[in-house]
Length: 122
Image (cartoon, rainbow, N blue to C red; front, side, top):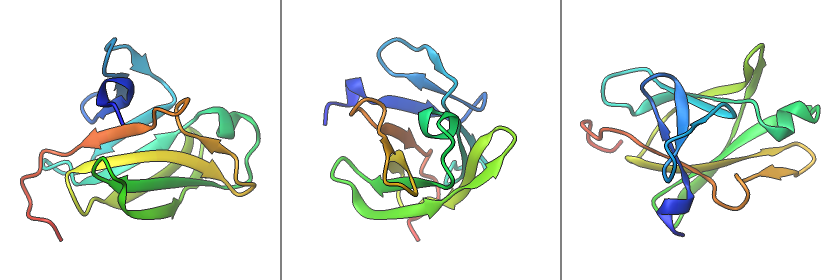
């Protein structure tokens, strides 16, 4: 997977940006809860949310090979679908799916988030 085509999510400012252009992406917002960036709240308000999904899941894994993949159930909020996770590793890859198995994978590019990695892996 070519990282230049992924959207890189940045914690500061509670927004996601496209790596290539630096443009703000209002679909995905990430907020690190601690200084190391390992505990993060992810908010999704993309096409699945706007299409009336009954339930949305954060589909996440680690590293460019998607290790330890897990579907995190998200909670509906006024800002979109939200969940808080504790990252097992520093390099999170993710996309979203709904309960009808419709996917939003950023047009095949997915999203990524890199923590500061100060804490040792759990």
